[in-house]
Length: 253
Image 1 (tube, rainbow, N blue to C red):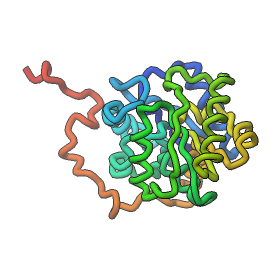
Image 2: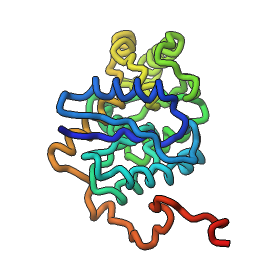
Image 3: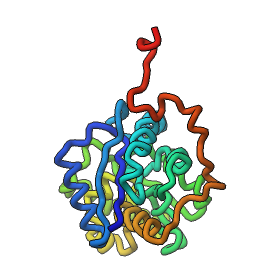
Image 4: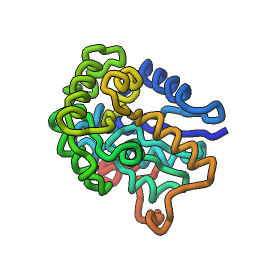
């Protein structure tokens, strides 16, 4: 059995949605893989729609990942921004998978040109920056918003599907996209990919299934991040970051 942690970096995910994501995650992976959805320790943002929120969530993610590492064979960051991926890879010895990194590179393998459907106009610059970080800006022909704040996303929302189809068709017809993907894990867990792919006529990739499968494959084959690229931090300098009961300014008085 391969045990995969799906770590949600924000806080406040409703129990019902957490249970649904865990069920969907296990349906997306083979029988020898067991996925557990864990929410990062707070405080932290309730959704991640800005660089500020990305940075805010990374401390709780690192604390939680370090605490639960021994229980898992791999970890998937449960946000398409891949927040804290470098720090998590330095901190952990198990494989750490970013859905964006996995999906972007998959898109570049199945198509010469791809489009990224992001959640908001405000997240378009962040999406372009991620494409640049992965040296695939020239292959990313456009980033289009589907106007869907994370906390408003409903997996049964047909209007949202229509917006993804509309923007997807425009990306294919106007921008020359040959593959598409949603740049948000809440959009991914809506699990409408097959329907959208059929309507837009090009691959519509599923970040959740790709990231979970990659995590399981890396773990099964003993693949993990290189310690030369991601050197272990000096743990004696981390102090309260990894403490079970961090001290506060009040404690020091």
